[in-house]
Length: 219
Image 1 (tube, rainbow, N blue to C red):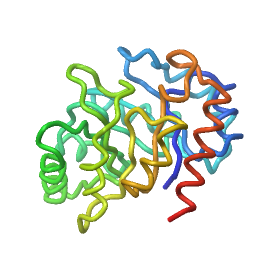
Image 2 (cartoon, one colour):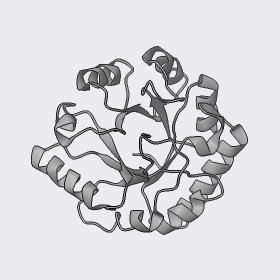
Image 3 (cartoon, rainbow, N blue to C red):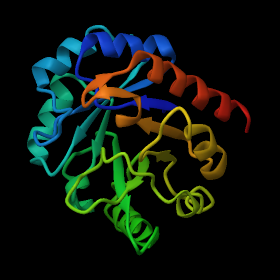
Image 4 (cartoon, helix red, strand yellow):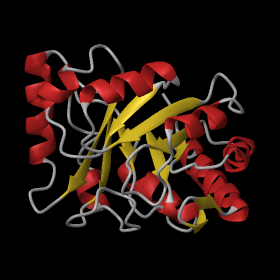
């Protein structure tokens, strides 16, 4: 489990900065269409500089299940983040590898999320974590848009659901308010701590982690 994940790490130096700032998870994006895309070889270089206790998360979008399993095992990763249109049956094909399933909140709110999780229960493949992100048509995350916090705040009160990770346009200036309103188990930032896509801004990153930790400590 983690509290603060910095996603879209593409450089060992940025990984070190994130860890020194106090993040306890890093995201490595294997989606080729993303400006934060990294190859497995590049990911291995980054993982070499990470302490063992840091959670290494691989982000995948509609990749072949066998390729996800191979990347997860070879790097190795601690958590698979599915950020595309993957079905519960897809998760079942990943075996016992831990999964964080991302959902982009649309007009139907949380109902599709709960229906998805119920199907996962029936298949015996409930994700370890759920991530809620903003919906932007045709884009699989990393949009810089806030998810609807009032809707997200309804999720933690639901009985028997996986812990919530909140994403979507989080920055040093809003992460504290988001945490206090939604009460997630953790937060995830990418564009909100960058100087350009895939390159982190050290000052913004440090400020984000500090603000998030202060908010988590308050409840």
